[in-house]
Length: 291
Ligand code: NAD
Image (tube, rainbow, N blue to C red; front, side, top):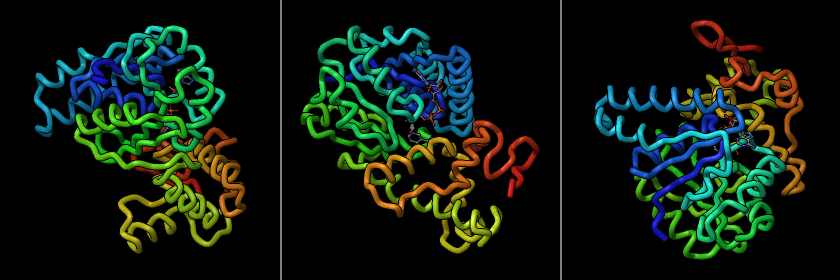
C-alpha cells in the first residue's frame, strides 16, 4: 500500500516531532489533539525546529515553507479518517489510547493502517479492540524525533506482512533505520533503558549519590551523552513511571518495581522539562539539581 497521508493523534513532544519529519519527507499530515493550545504550541515548535535546521543548512528555506504547508491541525479526531496511516502519539495511558481508536474507527477507510507510538503498551491488546488487528502495529519513534535515527517497528500477533512492509517503507522514506521488535512489554530500547533510569533514581533515593554525581558518573564513567536523571527529565517522569509499571505488571518480576521517589516526583507534578521541574529545575538560566 502506498502511503501518502498521515494522521497524527497527540501534539505533544512526540506528535510534533513526528509531524515535522513526515512533512519534510513529503507526506500530507493532519495533527490532532484534545487541546487547541497543544496544537498551537506544536506548530510553533515545528516551525522553530525547522528554522534551526534551515539555519544550519540541513534543509533549504523552500523545503521548510513547503513542509509547513503540508501540516494541518484539527481538534476533531474524525478529521483524520481519510488518512492512509494513523500514528497515535497521545498520553501513555491504555484507556486513553483505546478510546482514541474506538472513536476513530467509524470514520476510517477500510485500508487505513493504525499504529501507536506507545513506549510500552501491548500492541496486540490495543489491536484486538479494533476492527483491523491485521492492519495494526507499533510505530515507535525516539525522542527528539528529528534527530534520532531509530524507529522500532512492532508486530502484534495478528499484524500482516503488507502492513509491516508499508510502515517499513515509510521509515525508509524518512531516511531512518527500523529495528523489528516483538510485542513484549517496552519492546527493545525501553526494556533496557528504563530499568537503568529507574536504578539511577534508586541510587538517588538511597543516598548513594546526588543528582549531579549520578549524572556525572554515567556521563564521564560510562561515556553516556546525557546522565540518566537528565535523560529522565527529557523523556518525562510520568512516561518513565508508566513504562516501569508496564514492565512490572507485564513481566511480573520485582526487578522492575518503580522507585518510590520516581512516583513521588510524578505525584508532585514535577514531570521534568515539560513542566519546568523534575530532577532538575529549569526555571532559571541553567538547570539546577532539585536534590
Ligand atoms: P506529551 O505529554 O508531550 O503529549 C501527549 C499529548 O497527547 C498531549 O498534548 C495531550 O493533550 C494529548 N492527548 C491526550 N489525550 C488525547 C486524546 N484523547 N486525543 C488527542 N490527544 C490527546 O507526551 P509524549 O512524550 O509526546 O508521548 C506521547 C506518546 O509517545 C506516549 O505513548 C509515549 O509513551 C510515547 N513516546 C514518548 C517518548 C518520549 O521520550 N517522551 C519517546 C517515544 C515514545
